Length: 105
Image (cartoon, rainbow, N blue to C red):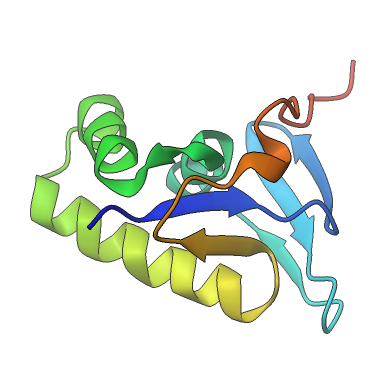
């Protein structure tokens, strides 16, 4: 069964210097995502299955698929616990047309 991941629409997020800054809507914890976390955030459109996100991570960061999957799952679980990401076994349509946050000019 496929797993789908979506960015929560209730977070404050901004790309700064190639890294995503996100504030949890549940507990106001601030997260500074590294390049891999920022890539997962970007790919988490609710329509792309996790296995495809992992494939993209492997291609972009030259990491083994099993390592990428374990790291992605742990990251997504932590973000979901803070209300930053949603996880489902079906595509998540609510943010399908939402553009990812832009870096300030």
